[in-house]
Amino acid sequence: MAASPNTSAATLTPKKKDESFLDKIGTLARKKKAKEVTELQEEGKHAIESPTSPSAPDIGPEGYLLGEKEERSMIEPGSRDDPKLNQLIKVLLDWINDELADHRIIVKDIEEDLFDGQILQKLIEKLCRIRVEAPEVTQSEIGQKQKLRVVLDYITSILNLPQGWNQLKWSVDSIHSKNLVAILHLLVALAKHFKAPIRLPDNVSVILVIVQKIDNQLQTRRVYEEITGANDEIGAKFERDAFDTLFDHAPDKLNVVKKTLVTFVNKQLIKVNLEVNDLDTQFHDGVYLVLLMGLLEGYFVPLHDFHLTPTNFEQKVHNVTFAFELMHEAGLPKNKARLPRPEDVVNLDLKSTLRVLYNVFTKYKDGGSVSM
Image 1 (cartoon, rainbow, N blue to C red):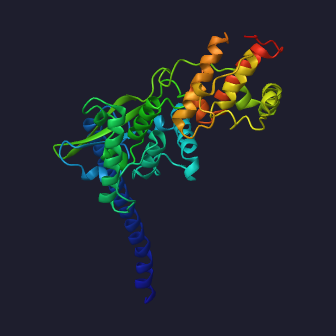
Image 2: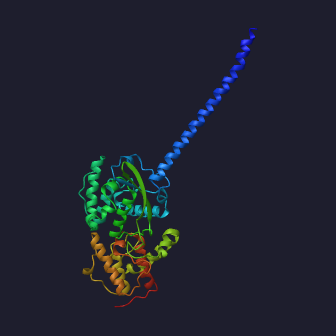
Image 3: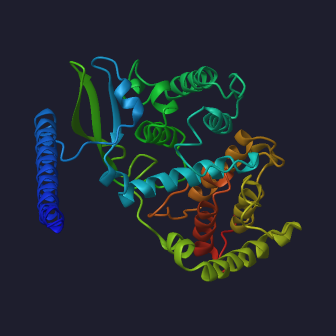
């Protein structure tokens, strides 16, 4: 008889376990449903507050610190990956690094390396051949902005922009906050003004996500922002020519062309005991170009017409410009694809130098010179 209570207990124990398991399942189901309801409510709230936004932008922690009606912009992820945008960034980076090569400065990241004004100061000093009196480099945000403000004010005066125009494109705050679009607008404006020997990609644009705080809530909208238009900013609409192809795809053939041109010019320059060994550098001051044209055309160029030993940029530009005038008087055809500027040759742009020399070579390669 003593076994009866144990048997009863044994039969009751599984029943309690079954009830506990079902209760647990029910509790989980209710929690899941409540979570789904909450998520659905949040999704609906977001859809109402930003009907044009398919997903919430990543505005970073500072985005939630915006003041009332203050706004912040960022590039939509899809636009940030646009190949044309990345090509523009690369072209501008290459240009900056070419300009600052003498300073042993290498810019790798257009956002991280330009925000504090240091690189921009060096770039302006090189382009204008002046010194910008700005505060020294500092790690403090206040100090960096003070330096950046001086540099940007100087740039604004150089570009001769209408009052307030640049504020629509860039500002101390936007550059310092590493706003890529603002930095690109600034660099494109500099490239246009200084007629940089580069080709900007056509019609580069981005979609900006603008986040603004209204009634203590973040609201978003999307706007189209054009960074470059048709490629006529630097000079003219250029078509690619043979030298573009040689530089990009056939460096071995490029060396053959350079040797041919060296042989051609030395055949003339040897008459006055001169010799060219390096096309990359020996024509940049214009002296050999002037002498070459005189030898090819059979006349002596008066020494007072050019600088035989130029010492600065202006004198070199004068020489190359004078050489171009002699070429024009000799009836040399203009390069239809790309007419170099004297500044391009002085700035050691090899493509420009080769285009000029090849133009001369094409006219005189058969040895025909005009006796004056």
